[in-house]
Image 1 (cartoon, one colour):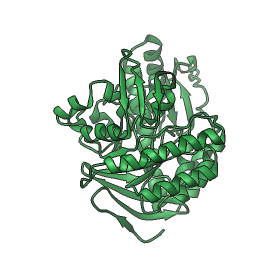
Image 2 (cartoon, rainbow, N blue to C red):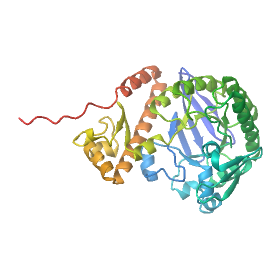
Image 3 (cartoon, rainbow, N blue to C red):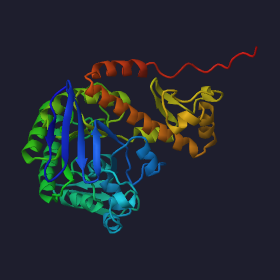
Image 4 (cartoon, one colour):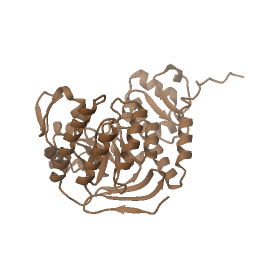
Length: 389
């Protein structure tokens, strides 16, 4: 445990009031409310968490969502969203929103973009039209969206990349970060995050962190991980990078979302996460439980009257059986993905709540050990119906 530390000013407020090792328990304050950290952000790429009403997402415990600059730029357009009252009103989410800048699409849509010093030109994956994204335009779009947390435009370095390739990519991102800072409009309750790049090379990560500290941001993200490198490599890079970031500012690990990685990343000092994994898995029949992952399309569930996770109080687990959920997926009924997505989001928020409580009580190591032991067991034994007397 440690004494409270508070950072506030024209942008975002951030208070740290407990530590357990490198792990931190804090609170992020924005113009649209507070976020208890460590926190997981469900992904609402195109102004919706797929299959979920905003009220359902909030009921899981989520306090902040992620939207995407690139996708909203293409459809329906930032100016249109601004004219309709901003992204919070547009998608009926009154709580905080963080928007990714489009930097991930610089990597993932490499075949559809042209990169230069000034920015990137995308060929729309929707209709082939050309769209120009510069650091200044990325910041402008996020301002039009009324995003509480704006991310700098960067080039997400792919894996594998040589040290020379990673260095060139990272230094371009640092030049863009300076331009984003100059373009960002200061407002109470809104902030700009820098993004550390550098691939899997510790010296480059330290160089990037130092450059961002020199510019000065409301928060600091760690990008370019969970892009194909082994999990142990990701954690090693994180172990090097997190301590190089300002202790009084929030730290955000981008795109990392396996439950076991969340636990280990919190242990290394990360405050914010996002990932499509719980929603994408929910749509494809994969559920997360205290005992590990479950494939609900597997025939072993067809006669199973038990809930997916007896320890969970979500609508799926409190009202429906594994057999019914299995039936929904086999029948192609939309209720299956809806219920399982709702469960997965609840599982993630429950996990984050447990991590926060463990940090507060100084018991994180015991919490992490118990989590890994249970999660490593895998699913429950197959159900066997009782033999009639």
